[in-house]
Picture 1 (cartoon, rainbow, N blue to C red):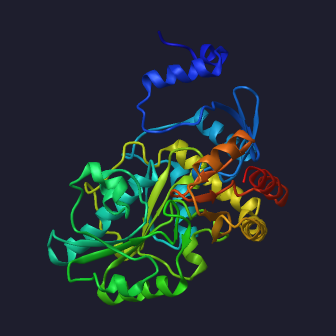
Picture 2: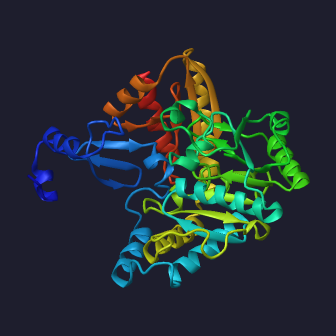
Picture 3: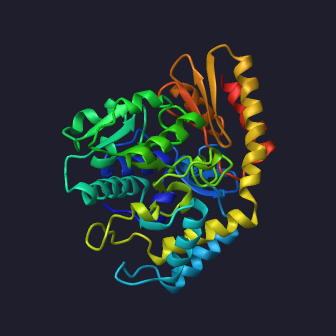
Length: 402
């Protein structure tokens, strides 16, 4: 039996979840919550319970829920034109591309449907760049241990966590892994076949580890010397989350290739990879996407940049992010089972001496949405509109659950 949305909404929660479990592939261990609506910093479930959201759909919903300007832009575009394909131009994606390249200090952009697809494009860009130089097809990429870049075969190949890779080998070849924030470990892996170095300026899934300025500047110099492309994965740490539009801008280091997604569309499926002119190696026929950069997601991304400017989102992240850091430092000092506190802006983590899964679940039971980064670290990635009052409320619930 199939159900209408209205019929599912009328069911008891567990009955609706049972319907989901009959048809969805079980690739997530979901909490038994069905969210129905959101407003500002809060989500509401099907039973009317209210939750303070410090997850933002995994760093996606930067503007909070029910942002009027964003919703209006998307609704207006739905009434005009949703999709045509990339055989034609459309005004929203042109405007979004101009704003994105300017904000990222890059020259050209290819719109994708997700961050994982953006990583795939970045890998192809690097390999084609090297192929154009020497005609070889045995080039290598240096990635980082404990990194996370996605779950497709290419993105998984540069993800430095064997747990994610084991069942899916063989992956694409020619990938070596260095130690994050250890320039010498990168240099030791460079050969005449190295075509790219890829890393997150702030590691997310790996436990919230910011890069050091020395490391990023050293990589930039190394890549310039060896004519290797430097790829920054800004999918989670970009789009204002650290207080700069992109995390690498905290260090004054620009990559040759950059990947973005998540908050770029604030809930609509859009990602992108951007390149400097010298790295624009892909030509007609090398890459494509049926949906990428269609009018609907173009309008969403365009609105995001306008709202960031109009609401001065970056200033709020800097100010309230500093307050969040101060408050989490106090939480760490008060609880000996917390072993470390890392991060910047609205991308911070508390590391515990034991797995944090039960604590995250208890916080959710008490109306606070948090997620982990790895096994022992709680990740704090709220919407970028969070205020000090929301930080205070979050800390109150967190400490009561600890």
